[in-house]
Every structure is written in structure tokens, then in C-alpha cells.
Image 1 (spheres, rainbow, N blue to C red):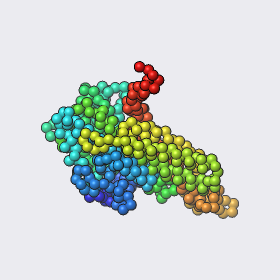
Image 2: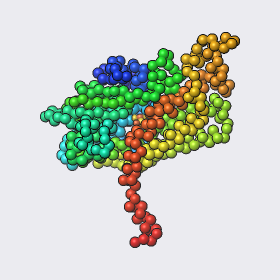
Image 3: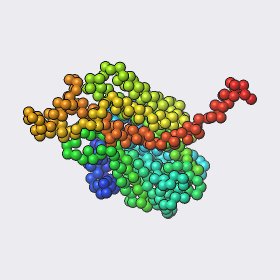
Image 4: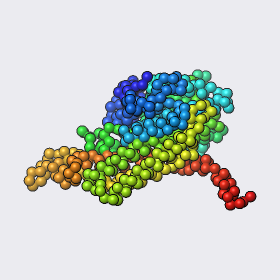
Length: 490
Ligand code: SF4
Ligand code: FE
């Protein structure tokens, strides 16, 4: 069954998800003005799947059931599937100019699927079957799942079992015949509040003494003992202003992050995918991170397309479009954006089949992809701000532009004065100019910067995490041999 966006939003109302924001419990979080744009953003991943022109990108035949499913719930079956994933993410980025949140689930499905297969081979466990049954349910009901990896981590110099507070990494506190009880939290969880389920994975490679921390499982978002504290974003309270529209920049869509707390949550055996196999913790992390680093070669590129378009519009409206330096800056932005895309496509095209049968990306190229994402969006944003001009951060509010209060000697209103002095090219209204500048403000340093600029740095792992992988995968010894052979060194 493929849900529509409307059906998806209705399905969230059925859940008893516990959400806290500004120190209070939010009962109707689905309609909360600060949260709703992020829900509408996920809804786009449902609605696009019903559009004929995007059917090939957004939907696919399930490898588990043969039924048509949303690609966000798919196990990649080929390098073509991997490339289509990136194209789907670019499309969703273009349509939302935001983080549409559903990729973390998709990336965790593919990582947990292949890793559980290999754990079972090594340890004689039955996690893979558990996971396949779980994923069939997710595919069938067309659910959103939060792939939850990042623990708070406390003192970074200490491993999980050596922390002052044992809860700084999610861990098993009790083992019963029918399941386990887990405690801890996952930080900056993208799309966690509007997910139906959570798929928890360990956050780093573990040592044998960290056994209780090497745990992976699924649980409903409203499981007993689970609650979430919403992350605030720059300029987020603008969404609470009466009649907010132009000042929001992106009125329709946004991302969301939250602290997800597991306060002694019971997990039945059927939903456990790892419990104590510390030797596979690193593999699961590496695979999930690899997929998510590939993802950024799609989603951030789609958002980049909108930013380039907005910068070009700002230039048009300012009457500056013909200046050669403006044209050159737009070329540079395009070059950077397409370079990110090239890496997303390359790590997909060079993917390979796992032992479990699904496909994974080329890990070296996926890490190069994300490393570029930690830099290029900053340069794209810098150029966008350069082209837009300082007005994007100095302009009066929407309320001033709309104000009918008389202020001038000749009886002009505040709105008339604002419109008079901020008018530019005759090809646009002052409001259109405001809209595009507010959009750039929002994406460069407002609430959408969470999903574009800063997320480009830290999402899917901070830059150093990729450099470690690049070092590991870079085959320096092989390269030395190449040099020796050419230079005539025995
Ligand atoms: Fe998807 Fe990108 Fe958001 Fe990650 S940052 S969930 S890849 S849209
Ligand atoms: Fe992200």
C-alpha cells in the first residue's frame, strides 16, 4: 500500500508520541506551527510516489514481497537502484529545499539487512530473519522509520562502558526470556518525531567489554518509556508569529531534529537485530555511514539547485544579472553543486553486492562525497550571500511592509515607505524581491541552515570521520607499489 501525504499525516495522529518543546509537553504536535513544516516535508516523499512522472524514481518492486513500494523502504538490488536513490533524493531536495528526513530509515535498512546476515553466519544467531520480517511490515504499511545512530557519547576519550554516566550510550539494562530493556538516548535525530518506528544502531565500533552497548533493535515511536525533546532552530519562533509568511523564507517545508530518550524501553525478541556482538558494531556503523554519505550527494544537491535558482533570481531582481562577475559566480555555484552530484553517482555506480544480496556503495567514494559536502555548500552559500546583498539580513519585517500606519509627511504608510525604498527592478514587485531574499536568509543562516549548511558539516558524520575512512580505504601501500614500479625501486 502506498500512502498519500494526507494519509501519512493522519497516521501520525494515531500515535501516542511524547514530544516536549520549550519545557512543555506538546499534545497536538502534528499541528504545531514549529513542527508542522517538517511533517509536510516528509509528506512530499509520499505524494511524489503517486505522480506518474516520478513513478520510476519514487517507487520500485520490493525484493522481499514483489509488491510496489516506496523507494525509501527499498533494499537496493543493483548499482542502478543506488543511482536512482541519489536521483530521488535530488528530486526531493528540489521540491522541498529542505531535509525530507526519510533517508535515515532507508540507509539503516540496507546496513542492518547486510550486517545481520553476516552476524548470523558468524554467531549462529537469527537476527536477519527478525529484520526481514520487520522490514516487510514497514514496506507493506509504507511507514517512516528513524534510523537512530548517534549517541550523546559523553567524554570522547572514554569508551561506552568507561563513561561516568553509563547512559551516555544506549545499552541493555536487563535481559528477560522474552526480550531486553534498553536505556540511553540518541541525539540530533532527524525526523524522529514524525517517524512511525525507530531503528536503533550502535554509534561506534565497540570492544568486548562494551557488550551491553552493542545493541540494535526496532521499536514504535510511542513505545512505553520513549520520549523526545525537540531541537530548536535559528529563527524558529518566526513560525509562531501571527500570519507568518514572507519572513519564513520557506513557509512550506523544514527539517527537524530531536533528542530521543529511551527510559527503560522493553524490546521483544522479534525486534532485536544485535545484542552483544561487539565484533560487528563497527561494520554496521561503517555501512550505515557509507549509505548516508552517499545520500548527501543527492539531497544537498537538490537543495543546492534551489539556492542557485534563488541567487539568480535575486540578481535579476536587483538588476545585476548581466554583470560578468554575477554570471561567473552562478557558474561556480553550479560547478560545485554538480561536483557533489558526481560523487553521489560515482559511489553508486561503483557499488557492489553484499553477502546478504543487497547492494552497497563504494565506501571510499561515498566518504569522498560527504567530505566535499562538508565544504562546497559553505562556498555555495557564501556566493549566494554575495549575489543577494546585505538586504537579506537588514530588511524590515513583513509586518512593516504590510503596515497601514501613517508615517510620512504626505500621509504615506509604513508599508508604502518600505515598498518605495526597497523597490528594485521593474520586473518584480517588492514583495517578490523580499520573498527570494528571505528564502536565502532562511537557507543560509535561518532554520533551514540546520538542514543545509550546518548539516552538511556534521550530518552523516563530521569531517574527521570521513578522513579516517578515506585513510583506511585509500590503499596507500598499493600506491607506493605503483610509484616503486615506475621509479625502478625493488
Ligand atoms: Fe535525507 Fe539529506 Fe535529510 Fe539526511 S540530510 S535525512 S540524506 S534529506
Ligand atoms: Fe542528515
